[in-house]
Amino acid sequence: MGKRLLPALGLFVLSPLAGEFLLGNLPVTALPALIVLAPLYGGGALLIRELARRRGAGWPGMVLLAVAYGVVEEGLLTRSLFDPHFAGMDLASYAWLPGVGVSAWWTTFVLGGVHAAGSVLAPIAVMEALVPSRAEEPWLGRPGLVVAGVLYALGAAATALNPDAYRAPAGQLAAAAVAAALLTALALHRRRPAATLAERAQAQERERAQAQGQAQERAQGQERERERTQGQAQEQAAERGRGQVPGRVVKRAPGAGAVLGLTLVAGLAFWLAALTIGVLRAWPAVAANLALYGAAYALVARWARRAGWGPAQRFALGAGWMLTYAWHSFPQPPALPATPAVDLAGNVAFAAAAVVLLAAAWSRVRSARGAEETATL
Picture (spheres, rainbow, N blue to C red):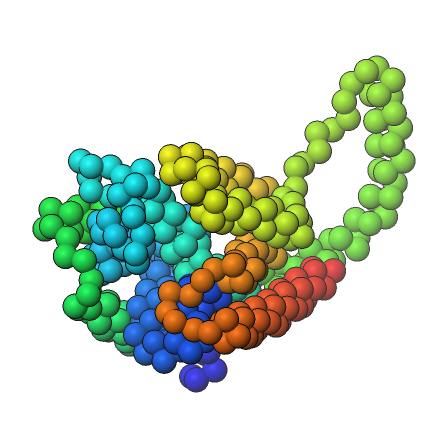
């Protein structure tokens, strides 16, 4: 039982570590804050993943739930969306929307690239890569789901009851609650329930039987295939001679390396827009954030429909964002006091730990992929 819960416990801890410490927002001396941050971040990430997997919502559902999580935290708990002076910033001068009472830049920045991608989706992708055989099934039973919900509620209450938090008007709080509820409903609406463990076991047995049958058929068909190869080559040569295009090539998804590289480029663009906002100005930064989110979602959705898309590419997305957080921690000043030496040491330690974790996850993904390929031979 304890071993089965390890992925859930790992996500419970990884989410706050990535979202605050790997990012560089909190120094290593603030690790005791995990008492509150782990229930809030980790409990939230666990609930998002479990609900999406149980309802069959998949990654599109998790994206919506992650944004809803950000709306709850920043709109209802810390109320940073409505605080014009949050964390000492003059958000009223960063694309402030007077009728709504929010900064368009801060909203697009913190809900998307920070909370949805960094605190929720990337940790989930990495933890699922560490247990590829269980990546698409729930990790918690109903009691575990209740415990995760209680922990999240406790973390949320501790955050909301902070006496220094901004006191937003009731209308703004109601609007945030409605937005989060709508995103949640959209994520889970009419989704197919996830298969039970017994159903998965039966499906896996059927897949193994089919694989054996396919292997036998493949052995019998290899000779026929060799005989057809020469004829096909001759036919394609004839088509080229007539100016025709041979049979259409099926587009394949890019490899994990290409996905990782593009994710790193996207992360660089996202954080450069934030770090240079004084030069770029707020509204161009808002446009850049929205364009980046739209392009990333459309591109990944397109790739995911192609042959060859799988766990390696999903891991690459999460790994790319975590590595982005790792380099970002060095120019990021901590939100709490820390000496430069302590801050640097913490950044180095968290970045190194992230690299080790990602290397272990990649090893598990490669091993699982090799095992699947061997099973189909």
